[in-house]
Amino acid sequence: MVTGRSAPAKRFVLLLWMLVAFFYFYLSYDYIRVTNTDRCFGDYLEYVVQIAGQDHRPAREIWALLLVKAEELGLPIKGQDINILGGGESLNVSVGYEMDIDVPLLQRQIFTKHFDHSVRYKQR
Image (tube, rainbow, N blue to C red):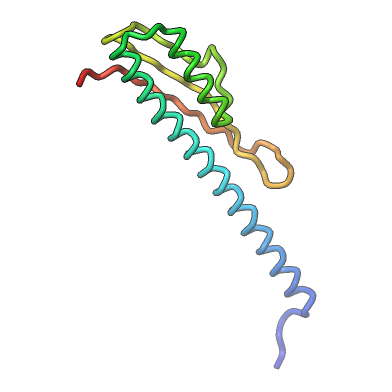
């Protein structure tokens, strides 16, 4: 039986496919991790806006709560990324930031994902 390739060539091709699979798995994992972290922050933002609007909390307190949560989740949100307009029943908070998706092992940015959140107080 004649095969077109030698055993070392087959091993090399297998190794190459394994590296490609690892690369895509890692990129997928990093993308899913970033998206899930953003979803947690978005849920927290909704919660804070509803409580702060209901209790007429000051903007400085909302700003501090959001920065603490962002630090806890490891998000690159700075103070200027948070915009708070109005107060009480007219409260409107928007947050925009970017997260990097890295290349495995090299820790080099391959893709930047931009996130925007805009939440208004909703009376119940």
